Length: 525
Image (cartoon, rainbow, N blue to C red; front, side, top):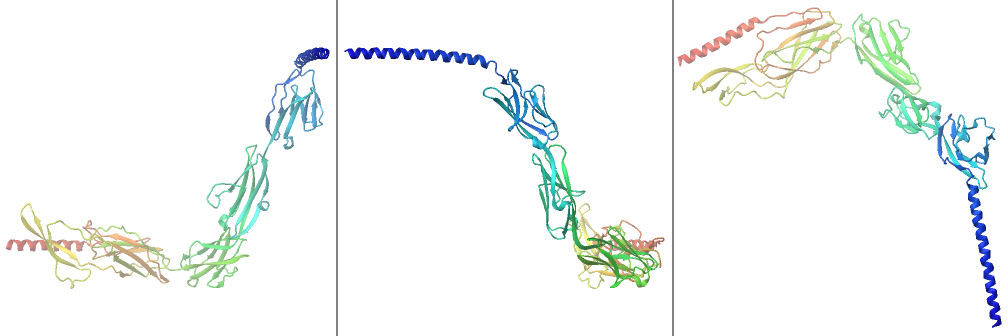
């Protein structure tokens, strides 16, 4: 029992001491907490927040660091481990750095290396800080172009143009072509490279790559692309028409890279530059051979020959004394039902000695027009005895409902003509030496309301011309002109007209006699 009392007494004593210790430490903690709160009321606090800034090269970098209660604590600006400022003292030797408006950090004339993190720190027992991130925007700058801006490529080869640029942000590259579209027809192409397949001289020129990232001015560089190719020749006229005593000029357009050497041949014989009968000249890509005073022996074939390191080319030109192809001048619609007045002109230095006129009926003519349901036509059983161009007489009866009787009319029919060419040889008259000559001719015995094709060639002492262009004319359904014209001859100075009124008189008299005979026969019946 005694032991029990002693143990109970010890436990009470121990609990009393424990409670005393807890009470003391609780009061000390509360006192320390209150003291700490009182002291913290005087520590500086940041007003500015951490931010990311972008500045272009050359700008002034401005970084804010606003705090409350700054007086009793030191503020410092750091970049990495380097201290830029401490309080109001500038530590860095960089003359571009300064403090403005208290603790705002400024860096003049920003350069790309100024990019990075900047720390504003308060030197408290546990340092407080904010971090600003600076990005420097750099204008685009071309750093590389293919072959330093000059490139030579052979015809038929592919080529790849490259263009590199620096800047922040990374620039976009755009390709254009000076004074021209790109070979694929586009105005521009966005890429760091541009590929051209199967090069030829038309794809050469100056190509421009332009870099742009939205910062400052764009940057550009040029690539002069030269295409190396053998000579290419085109002639202005494959046939040059001239006459004796005239001056004739033969010309060819020559392209080539490198620049070709051009010479002239008469048939296969080179023409001597020293020959005073000729003048040879070359200006740009146009080369000419002038024959001062043409002789009959000068007519013939000439060749323009071009030669460079990559090849040789030749094109032929013919100097001709022949007439040019005639030009048909007449109206395509005839005024008559069975004839057509065709006229033409031709240019020839020598007098025209002969014409050939060709004409034919076109096979696509429409069928003859009908005259109604009451038309009874009685054609001759045999028309073989009629010539191709002749007319024959037939009759048709037309029922007249108004008078309930039949009237008899005479009508003309033509045996169908074939569609072969008919040719007529014509002698020019009067004889003329004018450069522009011509004539007209009446083609007779044609079908009414039909379509024909005609062409003409002319001959002088040197040969035949080419055919005139295809010419199509139409005959009228009925005559709209009461007079006819004979053959006319044209020159650049004169023309003559011959009247055919006598044919009109004969035609009218025949029609009158025919109707009179029919009337007498009806009365006798």
